[in-house]
Image (cartoon, rainbow over all chains, first blue to last red; front, side, top):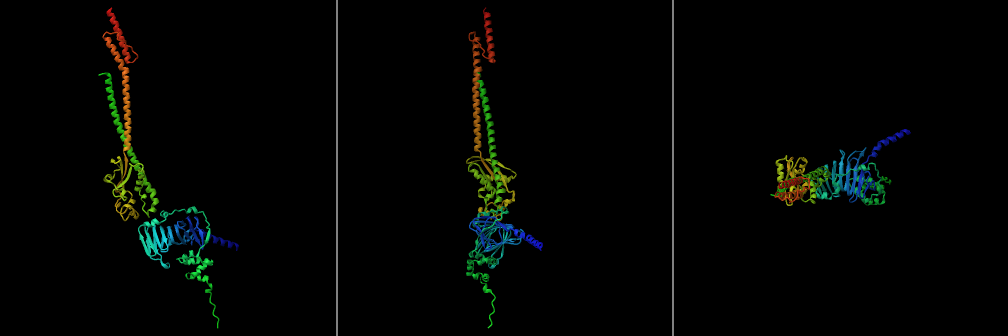
Length: 288
Length: 290
């Protein structure tokens, strides 16, 4: 009986170990004050930390965060920026599906190298998909600018309710822009205001320095829990469903719970959690 | 004519012919050397320009390829790099010049002027000509130029210079769309021109020649004076004395003086002989009188 149990534990370890060992990538440059949200807690971000699926990165003004993915390429985020690693599906050190990121605002240079898996990047007004290529994007809540340095990109307007618009092919050397009140437009060069506003280092190829952190393991120090105000954009965004589940434990916090209660009309999914009594099976009315 | 005059006349003739011959030969050698030196400078400058072009093309441009997608950087153009490098040199050496003169340039500053266009036409008419060397007058003095053809041997050049549609938009933003297109593979579109001032090496050669000629004249002058002094002391004065005594003796004045030989040279031997002759004459005269 003992031997059988031991074999079972060993088999479980061997099959699970590669999955645990798989790194999504490494934060290789962290300049200035930046933080990462894991589950419901903010951590101060430092170089050498590993990125995890679900991480939300908040880069302050004039700060730079570079993420070198184990598979898939490199991203350089320049603040003020917010970035969400929606899906980093790694299995046995290989991409097991499409990488998915969201960029509500900020400058981002993405050098994608994903072979067949692909990268999907969602911004408030546009969604782009690419496999191999380099793009520089500037996202604001109501506008998007993108220059395709190399490769080919599919770009579509983000539609309300998660439905995206028609897809366009953006080629190397093309600039694409969209604002909330204007559809996607393109030019055959990066316009000078875009280049002038671009953080200067994004004009160069992104450095690859992940090897420096190969054997470094960083333990992030927790700061505080996410507040209701910070959570609101995510609870009302395109990833609402997963964030309702993820931020559910925060309902135990009185302040957070109070804020949700005040806006419960927006979160009917949480009504059952906050008021379970309303959903108890109704006892049959006594016979008269 | 006196002996001294004959001697001096011959000596002076030798000196003048020698001075003129040496001066002419030296002038030619120094001028040739000066021109070779100028040409050497020009070739060195041309090689430096080519090195600058090559460095820009192979090491600088690849680093800036990504930036070129956003904004055109003339610093990645080999011709621009070489010209800028020489512009820096010109801050301290104003008379030196380098230009990649082109008949139809993208950058207006590279447009060939009249004499440069003539040089380019030489290369266009005879493409096998490796280089052209010439001299011309400039406001700062005479200048030597060395020219080599710019031929489109690399198809990559045509990305920017073939048609308006193929040219990078960022380049058009900077230079416009009027010039620098229609170039063809293997076409000679311009010439690299290095201009080196001739005044300094030529002036140096002239100064050297002047120093040499003055030195030569001084040596000739000193030799002339010394030879005259020696001729007068060793030959003329002694021969004159011998001649005076011999003249008196021939007139019967045996008391005119003695032939004393102070040295054993040819004149000393002659003096001794004349002394013996006089003694024989005196003895013969005494024998006749007795």
